[in-house]
Image 1 (cartoon, rainbow, N blue to C red):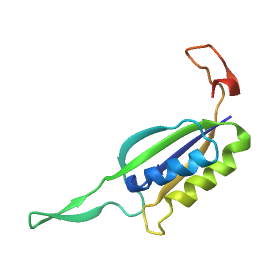
Image 2: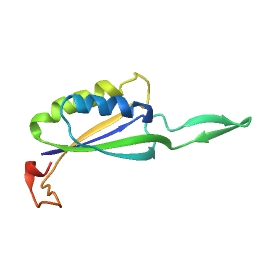
Image 3: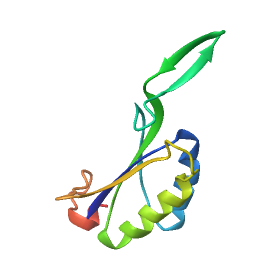
Length: 112
């Protein structure tokens, strides 16, 4: 099993959800987060005053999946979240040692 974590631009969330649903992913966890990368924030203007925003709003998507689905899921996220602009985000794939469904006690791949 693998845990896929993707940090993307907020307006790309629905496109990513649709792409993941199309390949059979049944559930994801979404969090609103803030951060910065190479772009180091951006300058904005509010009521005529210029100020610098160091942490940009992003969306973090997390999903646990079987090893056989990982490549398809990463490709789906990448193609759906891509804009070609700086700040498109990152995808991380991590090993999952164990998963347990609380309601039934199922473990491993059955818990997904």
